[in-house]
Length: 212
Image 1 (cartoon, one colour):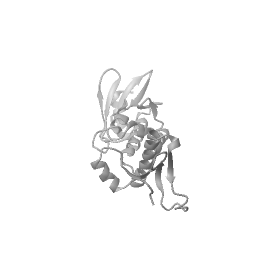
Image 2 (cartoon, rainbow, N blue to C red):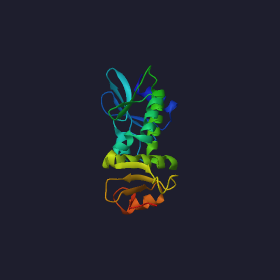
Image 3 (cartoon, rainbow, N blue to C red):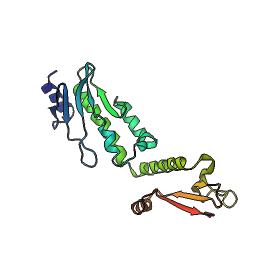
Image 4 (cartoon, helix red, strand yellow):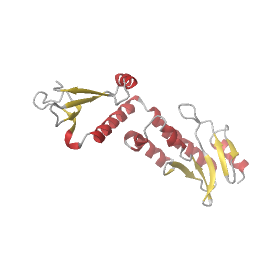
């Protein structure tokens, strides 16, 4: 299939604002109107590799997301579920951070459509809904405590069995084996955002002594 025919199929199956620009032998930049939330465009390359054509982001999608998110955050919890689901639904492969899709049976337009949908779905992790943000916040909080405090010294969702047997006043994490235990409360709210603005460390409130 000629380059002109491929570009025409891209326009017919995806949108008419697509252009193919040659970057060398059997390599083309695919310009589309699709963007990240900050206005940067998706990076898509059409290239010939190992006797077949494929579309690749050449690692750009993950790299762009790590401008605002830690790379480890993409590999766990809700964010990881979103990414894994998108890759599976649209048959996109992850080759060590490079996302790509092989073009089969010369179905170039279908491949580009699936690839764009997958990339856009993956970019959703940068602006999750409020409830999902709350979920990832708590996942991140637990991951931090697990990384910083040995298992024998921490208890999640702790309450005082003597003064609060019904667990009405729960501490998100209790750090023991100290002269006075430390109780840590995570704040997945506007207050937490304000704290992050004025403090470079984690958005935590530490209360020593009895939390009741």
